[in-house]
Length: 568
Image 1: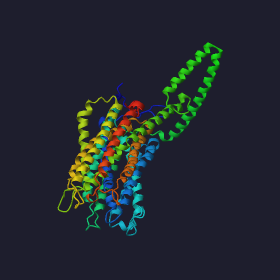
Image 2: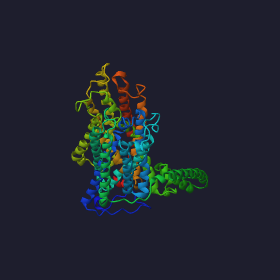
Image 3: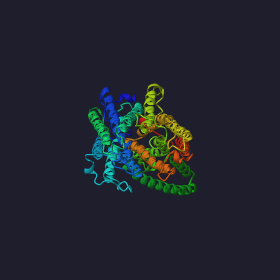
Image 4: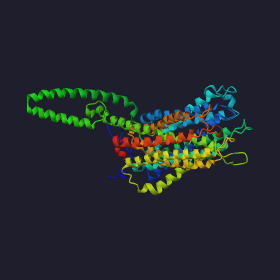
């Protein structure tokens, strides 16, 4: 029977303790509406998110708050780090207790409440009532002006972001009736994410200006006011779409199973080897007794040896192997083990991914930036549009002309190819950035702080990174969903976000090695070190190539990209 004719949502593992599949009685147009509502909600939510994220450091450095650059950056890391870590917590909650829809709504509530406080802080009329005092000491984030209030609000908002982020992509994929086309949903989902990012990048930097003669202006307030309306629209669209959604009932989570499975695997493995030693001694005695007994024991020993070769360490915890754990729970933990390896091997890729937001703007800031008007330069963040626009155009081309002719039966091979292509393109991006840096430095003059090389020369590296994301980032989302058992669908998706968070901290540590002045990272032509940043980019390129080789070897020898059988 064809999978599309079953009339049920796919439950990944069918075993004791798993509820029966939820029958899907929706019409085709209702399934499409469910996906459209989720994608539309994603666009508006990402718009609200990037409205804060892309201008957070600028807002904290504004004349009104006057934070130090280092504490502003620290606040940004706290915000992103908390949002990634909280995905793990809400993934477990949604998988085992609340379900994805309720968890997402709770996230939206926390998100909205936090944004209300943000706009009150940004509003000059209400700022003083929330933020007591006039200035900070710049010694830590909590000693800055309004530091405790801002950090507390950012953490609260990050928790809401984590609740939404950990579940939105998975919940949308569950609405797809035919599991064979779920990968196309992740393409569309990533397009929706980048549409939200494009709108935010184009609009918010223009609204939120901090000119010298506008110390008490409400520009930041107006920018965040627009963002909270977009967030409210995202929550409203998601709630309206509930009538069209199909909900997979929560039943358990892999989080609570990991330690018991590992402990029982060790206990059973130790007991097995004790019995094996005893069997060896008995075999020696039986040889001396009679030939028949000897042949029987050898046969028994051969069976045990063959079984051992087919068992992994965790398999010893299975009830079928004299363990105490359900086979399903052990298989769930094994899938988590493979996924963790995959996401760890993607860390160099995510470090390169962050360069679009970190070093590319810093590099562009010291290049020739055109003016939009007589006294207003083009926002540097606009250069990242090359990345987002490339993603949208490329995904549309792939969906329309390429994916139709690809054999999607072997999903593991397709994901593997996409990840490798994406990582190769990421390495190429760093090579391009390194070459552009060489030319940027050649156009430096000692009398000027900036290079004469146009900022538009950054377009190739942004476009190449966009092409890389089309393959690697989308494939990582697809893998996180298709490799997951039902008890870990949100968890595996959140592990991907956690690998992003871990990569940001590793990338920050690596970047600090290249600080050229006492103020930290500096692309200025006045303090030029010819090979500092060219080396920085080329080392990242070489590191990615090395990890591609490791990734291919791990997949060949250990099948780390193994998918759940019912999702192939």
